[in-house]
Image (tube, rainbow, N blue to C red; front, side, top):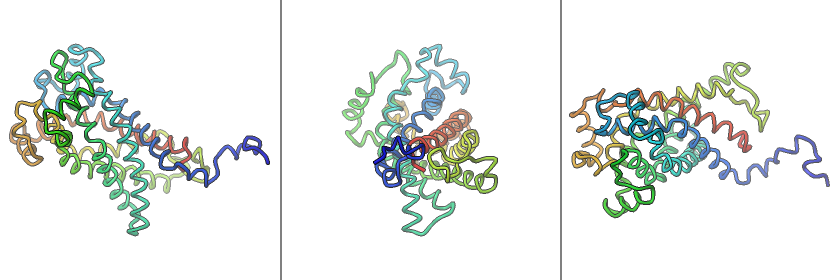
Length: 320
């Protein structure tokens, strides 16, 4: 019997039955890598966003770009990546679960409910985002606490110490889920519109201009995929639209997550309380949408890299 290597170039691709093996694992890895690449690209902007959203007293008088300049002067260039270790520990399973769940939810909604077209992308994206958030929320809590700290005023010495402190000082396991409700409420439209917009732009682009915007997939020539630069553009547009819709809830989530770290924490115990307090104290532009300009700069490349990396990983891991 001829070996796979001797059977020619076509034999390098695993047969259909073999490709089905470990499909979930390969999808999990593809999503995790996509998430890590996206977040590493924009980690400094993420740190600044947290500082501005929660009005850190060292930087509250500064804007986006002045804060980007001030953080390295006060804390060194590594200060821009504070909390990124916790971010990577969180974002790999988050991205993995989100992308894998999206593919699975999309199939279930189409087969079981008979819903297809653009609507099933919106539903599957929302459900995938919520699933990923609930599974990884404690890691996000710790990452935010670490990112909010300023050099010389450290309450938490690292990831493990932060876990211990939150658990012992803030009510056990429930302390890790402070701010979960606005996160879930905000994630549904964010993830839903993100996947919906990207999927819709992708399908329209490949249908209307396949030769201009598309090319054959590396792992399956019968499948048409977007060219890399088009993927980046569609992912960026998807991120911008999704962030605009869900941003006030993101601000609410951050303030609730920081909890006892903030002097006005007793006024931000619930989602509704926090929304009212931020609006009454700071208004819409300087409160509910504070840091939005930074978020556009952050989320557009982040989502662009995430979707593009995932599409490339799907080809590399033979998911098409």
